[in-house]
Length: 375
Ligand code: SAH
Image 1 (tube, rainbow, N blue to C red):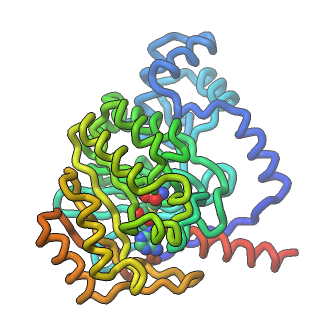
Image 2: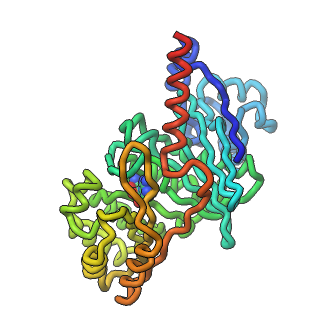
Image 3: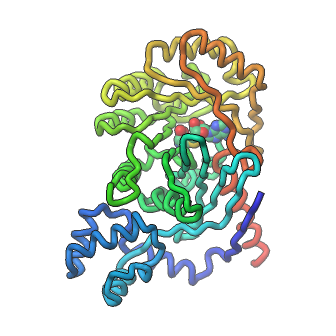
């Protein structure tokens, strides 16, 4: 395991001034080509410059305006004054010795940090990205939500997780999964913009078919996404076979019932023709009984779906334990016998910082200790 920690002093006055200045600038990497063209024309420049900038940003993946060598110097200066160029800075990189899975901790322009993961499979490279800094959904087993939501990510910050990983490794990213920290449907507009940019043939041109998004089940957004008729794979974090149990694990269950979620999924399948994935994290003595398996079977029967069983990844703040291997297998067999498509999620990078959100949390805690030492 290899770790690089970049030391930084948080919240100095200089940082705050810089942050405010940057905040008022245009987030140029979140513009689509049409918006970028309007912007460039608005600056008094030629239309074709937009295409050039777009290519530098979304294909050549540069991190500064100075690298845009076919733009006149004074135009580059104008861009520097008016625009913020989102370029995430890797502050920690952990590589699994077991399977090459790499976990990145990236720093954003305002000092916040987020996690992304590169997984190497036989069928291609997959990157798992975060959609928010922190999360406000409050799922009991999840480390990302322990300190609540800090802020939404911009489309450019979602994109740049993929861009940086591609640039750092020199490897083409084939698949993207929005399953890192945050609830993507709680940042819906930015998420949709992100897909548009990811899809663009003038960019990385990663198609919706190669994109999976996971949600804790914000029903209206599931329907909204269905209506857009994209070919995205939708994954639903179910984690319990009835509302009562789900409410003890996921606060969102107080807002939407499982029946409402299933109806929205049926709608999604009908409209898009895509198969849905249900994620079910198995927690010992909580949701792993035979009766749970039976309830789960009757919930999803007849639905074009796949169930992904995830052995829960224990976090130190809670005392949830993983269901034992033997019982996980029994649970799986039960579903299979009823004709349900089911897999057990392979644990990637088991030797590096486990559950979603844990790396960021330990980094933030470390920075806070450093800050206290300085006072
Ligand atoms: N907000 C999205 C993405 C969350 S992370 C959602 O709720 O789907 C992706 C998946 O990992 C979700 O199914 C989430 O419930 C699950 N997850 C989070 N922490 C986990 C943990 N400690 N163990 C097992 N699964 C976890």
